[in-house]
Image (cartoon, rainbow, N blue to C red):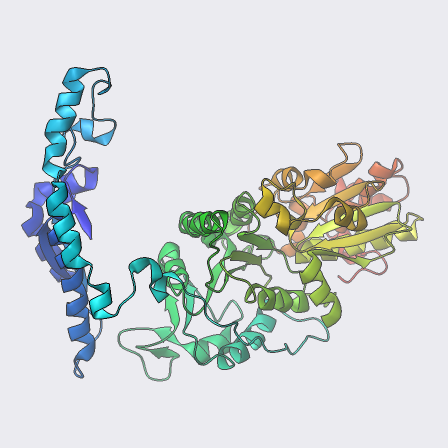
Length: 549
């Protein structure tokens, strides 16, 4: 429904000056829509238009000879900006239309009452209208507030046990291998997969073959169908909407990490509404919707810095962590465990930052499930005996952290590496609802002891993560963070790590500095590379002992 009031710039220049409603009607018909013009000042006309639009779609679907695309009903509601308020149709309608306080200004009060008279319905007429419409008992239908669509609570989906990875694997491929059996185990649930770009190149070929792209005219031999469940368009917000609108089924969004930032506005609206429902003790019951942000900052150099952007994860970490969950799997098993866990939740939007390239297997199935359950876990070294703790957030960061720990241990520093899957679980909660999702003081001390200095090695920019993890921060002398410094280009993963000072060598030096003695951690050649005085290839040619690189 378009409110055609002529005030926005594009309405004036692209519609009003080209012929107004008649021009728009022709334009919409040429572009595949089915326009329905109405008087936008008449509530009955708006109600009729909604019913008429539904009837037209029903007639289309009932026609066995129908051809796609369907002509989408498009209601044009003619009105003026600010109808029913003073200054309607003028620039005053863009802001507070009264020029005085109606409580103390008689002229303002009179202007308001005169304009609002157009909206006024005498109580007797209003009650009669309500009586005519309140036919729920007669028609045996629930009130809107009690309609099943408003109170969706589908039964828990079947979540099959994954075929766990036994070694190095692409986390996206592992997700693909689990997602197809998940779909097949829930035949009664409609699936919608929103995808703004290449699904197959992002490792989900089996899912594409199973669900197929939705197109109007399928090509023979391609994974396409008129009723395909993969909704693909170069409009990130539109494909996210296809998934988020599937409130009674299973949904998934897959996007390049940098492109997914364009979904943020829509995601925030969904998150805010779901959070409001929690606040009034009426939590939403639709299945949580995962967003896989892949081909991400640290592995996508073919298109330079336009494809290197961790902003989405950083922005979502600013939302309430009980409703907007941000996860950083470290390998194939932790990625599948996290996705499987998300589908066990309700009313959440979860962003999973997932590598598409093959990465080392770092956790077995039991450890992967434990990592999901607690949000963090020690994956290298002995926490009780350690002198310093490296907190790794992200797959490539975990790999570098383990390599740094190996070098530190070789030079006599006792180190442990803790993988932090869900940073939002360890923030300072901002209200009681978020506090139920976050770690208690005792749980925090168990995983992140206050006595230890620590280095945070993060997928994101370091500053937002330091702010989020204030409970882990012992101050500049005891806590440092390395992450994306907005340095990039046509670089491979080692090049990205070096350009952003996030290699194992940079991490080892930072840890040694926190311990008060950086001497002897690196060879002279490695130290020269860290300072930018030697070729960074030195850090790849001779990785430290124990490194999974």
